[in-house]
Image (cartoon, rainbow, N blue to C red; front, side, top):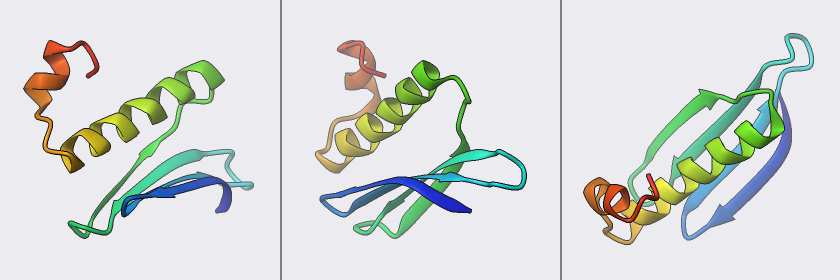
Length: 78
């Protein structure tokens, strides 16, 4: 897969990967602090892709700073 974009901050690593062969887009996330990682298929629609990436990054950063899912829902950011 080809890396199209990559951001790293506070131990959080987010990459957008693309398969030239299949056209598949994948968002890969890893957290150095917890050694956890996951990936998800990215939507091909740019606006939807941006919203998905923002959601994942917000969720991971919130948990990094101890903000619960309940609090994110409460402030309408989840």
